[in-house]
Image 1 (cartoon, rainbow, N blue to C red):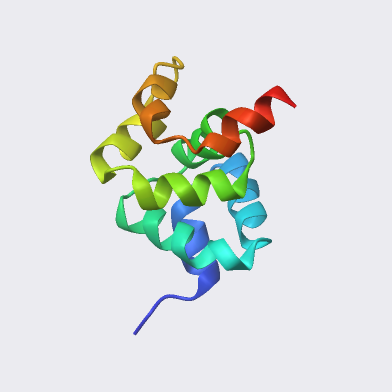
Image 2: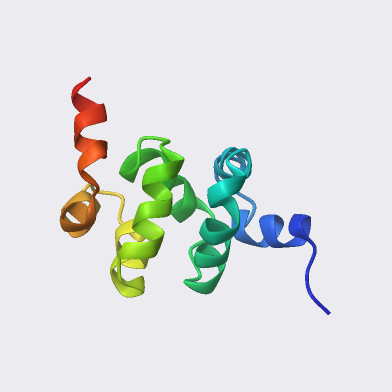
Length: 106
């Protein structure tokens, strides 16, 4: 039998309140939410790594998270999310959408 949404979110947040906040923000964009949550679960990206993806790598832009989830190879995305020294941005830079750079400049 499948898990409920709250069970999946609890598992992914891994006790990290910032990760849970990021997941709740993702759920507020239903057009992207299922694909993002599924990818995080499939790639075993959990806890603080979710917050790094949400905040550090994507500047809280859900559309950018979605884009990275569908374009970045799993091993690169997981590695980038696990780094805390900002070298993670170099790993995903080739995959960042053009609009993301433009939004940062505005």
